[in-house]
Amino acid sequence: MKKRSNKKKIFGSKDRPRLVVFRSLTNIYGQLVDDSSEKTIVGASSLSKEIQAELKKSKNKTESSKIVGKFLAQRAKDKKIKKVIFDRNGYAYHGRIKALAEGAREGGLEF
Image (cartoon, rainbow, N blue to C red; front, side):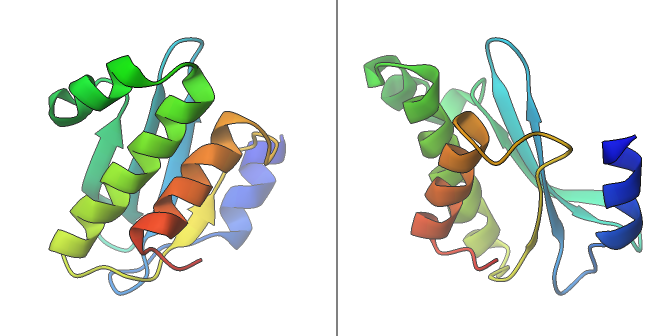
């Protein structure tokens, strides 16, 4: 229910896409979505091959989430995206979700 009511308020466009976060027990995923054309622009997760070496050095899943956030921000910069709308997907802004958001901010995304 909470997820559905948030979707009514949050809408990503081409110039300001929606940063959607999904959290499973072992991994975390983030993607930038353009809702007007219904396409994913950029995606990153803790399964991305480019950051596996960094993720092995992290002590816990929260640190891994921060690394994923920075990597997602770097990919967004390559596509010339700076401003996004954060969609926490019904999760509390705490722990791994917060770490991903902080990593994305450190990487240069604004929200």
